[in-house]
Amino acid sequence: DGGITQSPKYLFRKEGQNVTLSCEQNLNHDAMYWYRQDPGQGLRLIYYSQIVNDFQKGDIAEGYSVSREKKESFPLTVTSAQKNPTAFYLCASTPLGADLVFGSGTRLTVV
Amino acid sequence: QKEVEQNSGPLSVPEGAIASLNCTYSDRVSQSFFWYRQYSGKSPELIMSIYSNGDKEDGRFTAQLNKASQYVSLLIRDSQPSDSATYLCAVNNRGGNNRKLIWGLGTSLAVNP
Image (spheres, rainbow over the protein chains, first blue to last red):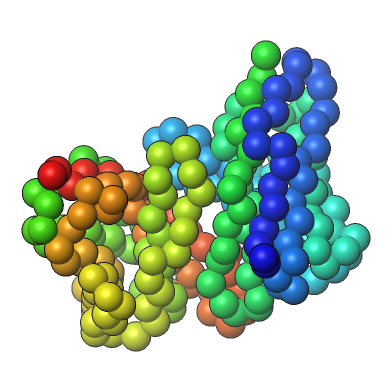
């Protein structure tokens, strides 16, 4: 079945540690997005990419990094510079100009 | 002023009633409008997209867009308990291929059996 796979579903990070969230899609979509969702704050865009080897910062990129080496993959690294990383992270993709489809999300907690 | 505003709710309706969810936006050049449903602990799923003034119907759902008044609404007819969720309004004012959406905070809907 086609879709967007995010892994892991739950992730625990220690203080000062970098962690990488995986996002893979087999929909042949060109554009991919990373959002962060906090209670009461709605969805906020971290990074997005419209083509391979190119990506742009969203509204809250500080403390995060991404890569887009393959069309199918758009991993997000939460670095130690992100001081408040506990949140629900959502990856989405779309053919250019079409509607966003979301993965099932990764819930990151700092311990 | 927030760019996309929604009443946070909770909006409570009895089973079988019509639920009306509203969203206003501030940027007059906005071109694309979306309603997503999000169950607790899950990711958003697209319910409706609308691009031109008027109504768009899909089953029990109707989206209504009024660009002059800068609002978009979602009507859910014959509401079911399974419709209980948070409904997110999203707006795209860039047009073309860019899907960098601006999101409202969502309206919580509770359908009571």
